[in-house]
Image 1 (tube, one colour):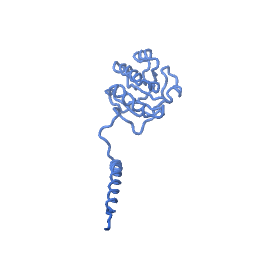
Image 2: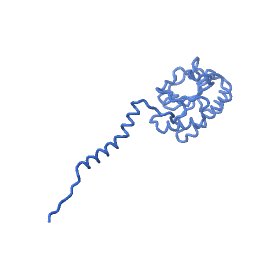
Image 3: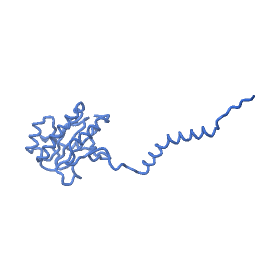
Length: 195
């Protein structure tokens, strides 16, 4: 009596290997197609306007509230939450300055990585002086003859996030809520290697 052994056809093994390789390569092919096709998601995670490329923050032209040039080390190596004013600071602006402090405090262990700054052409305004007295760690800077809010339209103020390299990375119009700014800051600080 002779025994015959059955061997599986070789084509089944090759077919299986080709199937596995194609399934592994499929996500890369789809991703490459979307990237080179220029597709972008309709909605992104951030709540503010992401500046791409980032814009340089004009540290060199800003003055301390006493009119003296700002020391270069004052803003170096920190993330900045900047409120830039287009005119006098009114009630909603004072409220936003208070919100900036609450945003920083809510960052818990990361609050030391952030510095709050107000940039205005009217640093002598009583509202700003009062805010500076109530919050001694608030940095009040003068911006003679210039505004960071060139594209803000009618907005009296705008909030900005500046990275430790001195680049404005995000802008926020007045209607963006403090919790949304805090969420963006939390995400930035979580994944940032600097500052």
